Image 1: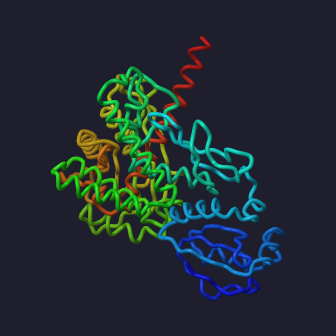
Image 2: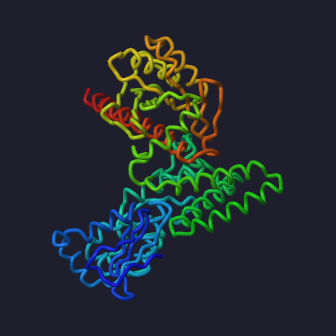
Length: 445
């Protein structure tokens, strides 16, 4: 913890540029607690042209006699630390400067397979204990968007259910490893031995997420590492491998300062690019990445998506959507072939250096053939094509290599996950739009 000065009249000379939490105090009493991706940039706003600041902030600065800062390794850690301190101290200016409705909590239901959700303040008086008979609450957090980003990242490491109710077939999230599937499948028998095993594993995931949300990440990492060593010593290698992947994933979540903003901002691309070039064994620059996915239910109103990342940042103006025209049955591989052939018939569109397909080896082989059959074969020497398999995050390359991303650099894992998730989101949104229109037309006939 860094303490600076005893006056708020001038800007402190020594402020770190790291992420962290800052506390304005009157003597020992906290007046306001905030977080920042860059403490120096954030705190500068309090000391420059103070007369232009809102009245409440000016009043807080006049009362403050001390400024403390706690540096953190990432924005996520700062977000969680801020919530921990606000809950502990209840600073008066946090409630004065921020309407209560702008505080958010993470709720976890009390069920065999607890569900996780975000909500506004669960009680009008947030000084009252934060617990109901149906759910536990953690917070308060100051940004619902950031909280949802954290939960999404944690879900890659510790899968949990978000289904609103039970259903007959496994949900899509279970197919990509984000949901344990037993928790929301109708007809699953409680007396089944698999139920008890699945419930124990699921509740362990929930406990791990709670540990992160309450600032106990280091303790959790130590526990996971201990269990991994124990499992390996007992020759339970599958369990040890799962724990190893969870450790790597959790460390990856907290390893990047800018993860709560654009996942890979342009300023970070210079560090990512050499790692990509090493993976694809090329010295050529990689600027444009295109991601592809297919969305369909029994072949009905099937769609394909193309998303574009320019120097690591989504460029939504370049996104393209495809309504499947030639494939009538539920055949994702054939649909992918159609999408790629149509895309690469557009010579006027910018050419990518990297193509990422959602899928495994069959999808990769289909993509290679579709692209190589197109008029763009002259560009093959600078085009890299790869497929990302969901469950184990395995990257298949044209050269035949299988790269397990969870064992490597977290920045590369996050990049490919972001591309895959964005292409899936875009394809699914268009698919739902078409199905809704189809049902509306059917009902009107």
